[in-house]
View (tube, rainbow, N blue to C red):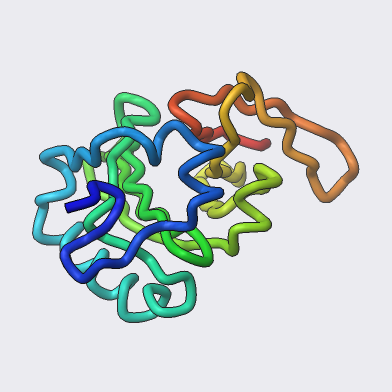
Length: 158
């Protein structure tokens, strides 16, 4: 069977695979992804966003963004879904997800943001192959640079 397809024959968008090495790799889900809370969150996310973006969960892969933040990235035919797992400073887990249309992903625009207790925002997204730092335009017109690892970025914006 074509490894870019799931058991149902669905395949992520060819341009997504071409522009992001992450989606050309063999899908790998970390132990964190087998956590029952993560599994339930992913099921809910698929129910809400799966059809809209044609998400292909068999092609989901995990990226350890920081020692405390893991991102499950799910490619699709019309977009990408992300599930963020965080071990907070107090030891409690945080889980949330979001998604974006292919055009947003191809531009490297943020896919997901999360407020922090100190008032800052954690911004997550994907950047195409060859991008080492993704510029993020803030509402005030300033730009911050987000380091990119395996096509994924996460940056704290004050």
